[in-house]
Image 1 (cartoon, helix red, strand yellow):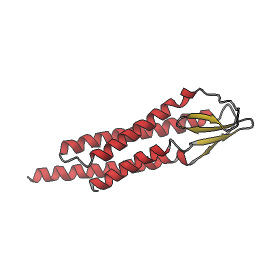
Image 2 (spheres, rainbow, N blue to C red):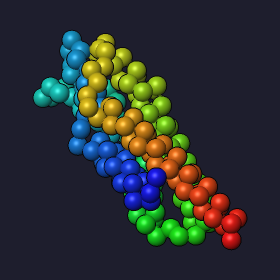
Image 3 (cartoon, rainbow, N blue to C red):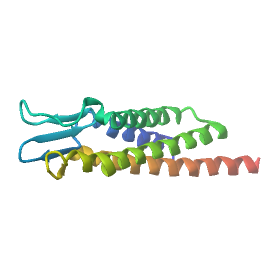
Image 4 (cartoon, rainbow, N blue to C red):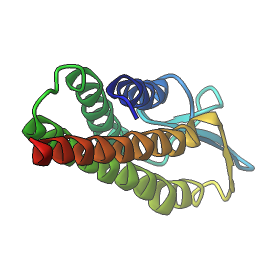
Length: 162
């Protein structure tokens, strides 16, 4: 896989996470309230409705999303300048950290937040498009990381020939 394709994958991963700032993750339709969950927090869909959680409740979700965007963006821009083996290895390590951050985001959102938010209103989540974007970003990041690992092997094999 070429560096250019890997850069595009990392850029698309960052873009998918950036879309989370504009799209909701889930919606809860309860008997007394409608709650909308996005990376900025939980909002009531009914004018004057109460939200059972403080604004800082979803702060870890926001922090993990911003971290994933920054890591993916950094990887996309740095791959064009990578020439030496040490640079590729450094970027590979950062890509693995990016995968861990994305997996942590998915785990935090789906294992905790999605289950907990619906309890006060007695509603099951209705997933929106934003809930699936991090999974697509994870697949793109894994594909780019695998390509990066192949490039490292190619550079090492050419270094052995010299």
